[in-house]
Image (cartoon, rainbow, N blue to C red; front, side, top):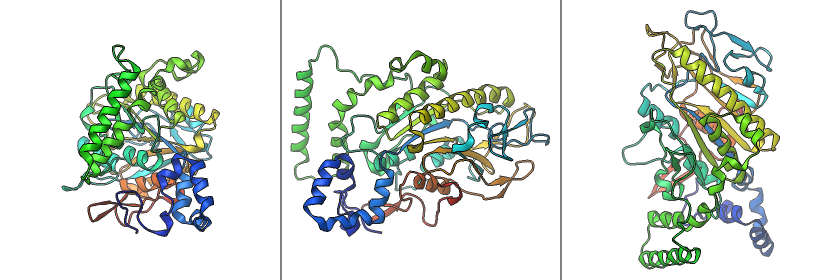
Length: 437
């Protein structure tokens, strides 16, 4: 593949129009193309076609921290020794049954692809959570960007006034595994990580500082930064400067985090829970142009009292997720927004003496809804007791390739770190075409 240079232009014919300049100013790009008609050929190139498809795409990740049980959600095994006390119910898809704890989602699967055949082979919270954020294993000498950072880079706009990547994790359990890293993409794509409040802290200008003062301070910082950068070639420095340049725009986005701007009936529909309020904020953010929002709901790590835990958490997930999908659909946003449910792993089919389920990465489930997804599909199958994948086994890499493809992002696209090409997914990985629209 063509090598990417620091200025974003790799030198190949298919990248004669810089992606960022194209996305950030349609009128300017049109004028530039019109002045040089030889460039019109790039509109027929695969790279430009992918850029056009990915424009306006957004992601909301519902992260089920600690590991939700596939048997109490997307892949129930009723009347089996591993099945537990909950039954399976019919859905609006012929022949497809899911847990009775998901009655609202059972009637909304026409836009959803259920994947029942993940085998990620890692049952440790820390390393499994990293893998399910990165789509691959760590390397000693490379810091990879996570899914949110990649989506921010590929789907965002250079002059955006809203955050590129927002991550909510307001529970205390498992927060150490709540990955959020931009890796070699740089500070520009780090998440706005909210752990204590649904609203970002210190985003407002202090009353003791006038707007003119604030502008002049920004100008002074920029002047000092330019002088420091003169004669230095550093992608890290460039990334930090880009992040600072967006401060005033991000300050103006503060109201997006305040659900008081929504009608009371809609707030009531999402419900009073923190998870519901954060899902509503996520919808507000993606509607305003934020490419990636992660809403984490903890703590699903049910080694004991699994069924009581899932009765509470799955019921809440059913309500919040179905409300979010209805809201996105009513606004015409679902076809451009991908909603993902994912965790670091699933739960064991075997029920332990504490009536719990332990860590299980051999045969578990996730869901994809909306953008780029062939709705009303179920991919993969586990055996009668859910112990093994029977058909369609996939890894974390294949799931990530599928997500990228649904968003119009080339999963084989290469970044360069020094002289080394780094594709978005490991070599040989392919998306699951059966769940792609």
